[in-house]
Length: 331
Ligand SMILES: [Mn+2]
Image 1 (tube, helix red, strand yellow):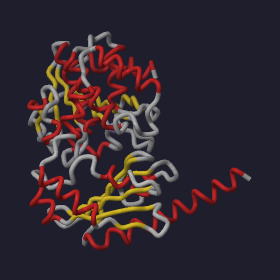
Image 2 (tube, rainbow, N blue to C red; image 1 turned 180 degrees about the vertical axis):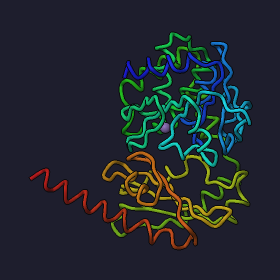
Image 3 (cartoon, rainbow, N blue to C red; image 1 turned 120 degrees about the vertical axis):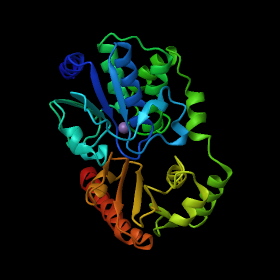
Image 4 (tube, rainbow, N blue to C red; image 1 turned 30 degrees about the horizontal axis):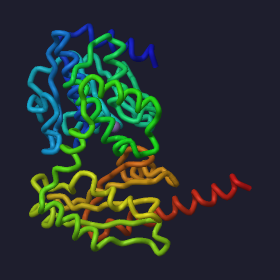
């Protein structure tokens, strides 16, 4: 890992201009990792272009320099692109081919799926967040971590660990978080921005979605669906409120929670969470999606009403297989 970090630092040091890109539908780890890296490079006198094709969702507008984010590539591409938190270069959105064409391409990520790319690959699936890897990179480069940088990195860690509650949280995660707190990042303030910034309308929408929750007879798989008209009326960005899937996940018997949301073009976004019995990134991958064993997603063609019949049987099959394997192991 140290050698990979050093190669990345060497490569980045060679250039004055750099593109930093994250994935479509960005969340805290994608944005936090990208913005932290951009700040670090700017401190070293470099120009950094921050690319997020879907912009910055409202609840992440508090992130330092998030107003510098662009949604389109500049006409003149820099000679270096650093791509963060992307499970495959295609995840950088519609302009991925141009990004892939730059001279030096650095892949910084923690997905375990093996969809790596570029001439410098810094991927560590044991890291709870890409922000942990960016932290190590910045430390290794002996770049001081100030409050702005710390806020970006801690946001990535908080979001990808479910506020330090998911199984990916390690002692290292906590040690890094402690260091970031000492540098001036406040978890309470970050959590308030991300998790306590819902509007009244969004909260009512969650209420209705939870009221119509469905489940398998044993309760191990739970899901709900939200149509486009409802999302468009109740939210600013037409997306399900951050973190609402964890209200499904919070059901005691639930092993897997699935949220189906309709998009403007009629396709269906599938967001999944697993408590560990099954690796849902494998199910997402079967539909050209991706993610982590405990948090993954994919897209389906419409209609919304057909979403559950395509996904839920696969989840149930994976659960059955997991319990068969479990019995074999304990014998
Ligand atoms: Mn991540």
